[in-house]
Amino acid sequence: MNPHRAPNAIVPYDNSGDGFAQYPMTEATDYSGYSKDQPEYYQQFNGENWDHCYNCRLVFSSFNEANNHFSNVCPGLWCERCQVTFKTPQAREDHFTQGCAHWLCGVCDFDGVTVDAQESHWKETKHRYECRGCTCWYERRYWDKHLRTYHACRRCHKHHDSAEQRRNHELEHTKEAGLLQCIGRCSREFATFGEMYVHLESGLCESSIENSDVLRCFAIHQGAEYLLVRDRKAILKKIFEGGELGINLFKCPGNGCEENFRYFSSFLKHGAGKKCAFAFKESGPDSMLVHMENNLFLDVVIPKIKKMAEDTNFGIQVLPLTPEHPRNRLGAIIPDTDALRPYFHTVVRCFHVCLKEIVLRPSNTVKKPGTLRVRIPKSFKRLLGALERNFHRATQAYMNGVTTAPHPHGDILIYYQATKKGEPAWKFLGDMHKVVQVLRVIYDFESPRYEKYY
Image (cartoon, rainbow, N blue to C red):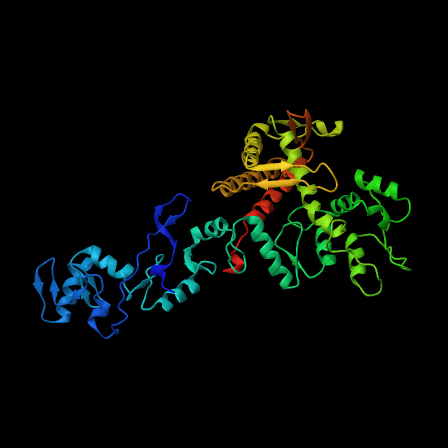
C-alpha cells in the first residue's frame, strides 16, 4: 500500500465539510525504473547532486565540504541521507513528503527508508492506526471520528451506511464466535443466555439493570403467567409494585418436570440443559427472549432519564436539612449550603444540555417497545464529559462537607421546583449517578470504542 495514494487519508491540514482535516493526496512520480544505487532515485522532485549550492552559488569539490556547508549554512536545501541538494525549500519538502525515498511518521521525527518501515513504526508506536475497511492510516485524534462517521465495524472495520447496519454486522461476528452480546448494551459478551442474565440480575451491568427490572420485564409478556407458580396474579402484582417475593417464582412447564426457580437465569440454564425437554424459543414474535431483548434495556433506561428530566425541568433548590431526631438537632453541624449549591446546579444544567440531543419515546403497548435515540454531534462527547466531571465534583464536595462532618450533623435537601418534591442529596446523587452511567452506556453503544481492536 502506498500512503501517498491513500484516498481520504486524514492529517492536520485543512478543514472539510464533514469535520475532518483532509490532506489533498497527489500521486508520487514513478521512479520504479531506477535502483536505489542510482542518483536519480534520490534526486526526486528537483533534487540535484551535492556539488552545487544554488542559494550561495558555490561549487564543492568533496562531499565533506558540501555536507559541512549545507548542515551549517543552508540546512533547508539539503537532504543528508540521500546526499542531494535543492533549489528551493519547497522542492526539499516535496522530496520528503511525496518522493519514494522518505516515509515520514507525521507525528514524530521518524523517517523510514521504505513504506514497510513506516507502517511497522505506526503499528509499534500507535502514532497512526490502520482502518482495514479503507486501507488508510489515521492519527489518534481523527481515528474515532472516522470510524464513527463511516459506521465501521469494531472488529473488521467494514464501513456501513447506518449505525443499525453496523450493529447487525457486529452481531454476525458475535454469532460466528458463538457468543451473545449483553442486551444491557455494555461491552460484555457471554456464551449462554443463562450467563448473560446472571450478569444482569447481579446489578453489575453498566446499564444499572437489576433483578427487579428483569422480573418486571418478564411479567409484562403475555406468556408470563404460564411460567409462574400458583397464585400467579398475586405474584405479578408484587412484581409490578416492586415488593419482596422471597419464593421460587418460576415453574418449568416441561412434561413431567416439577422444577421451580427463583431467578430467570436459573430457569434459562435449566432449559438449556438436557434433563428437560422444555427450552425457550430464541426467535419469533412470541419469544420471551426476543421480548426481553427488545424491552428490558429501554424499560429501565427511559424511566430513569425521564423522571430525572421531569424533576429538574424548572431547576432545583439546595436547602439545609436538620437531623431527623429532635435530640440531635441541638448542637448539630449544618452544612454550608452556599458553598455546595453551585455544584448541584451545575450538574443539573449539564444534564439538561445533554438532554437536548436525546429523543425518548416510551412504549405504549407490550408488543411495541419504546424507542430511545441519541444524536451524536461533534460536541456530545464533550458535553457528556462535562456532566461526568461536574457530577464527580459535586459528589466529592458533598462527601467532604456533609458525610465527613462530626456527628450529629445535618444534610442537604434537594427540592424539585417542577414536581414540588424533595429528597436528601445522597438520594439525588445516587439517582443522578445511574442516569450519568446510562448516558455513557448509550453513547458507547451508538459510538463504540475501538481501542481493543487496534
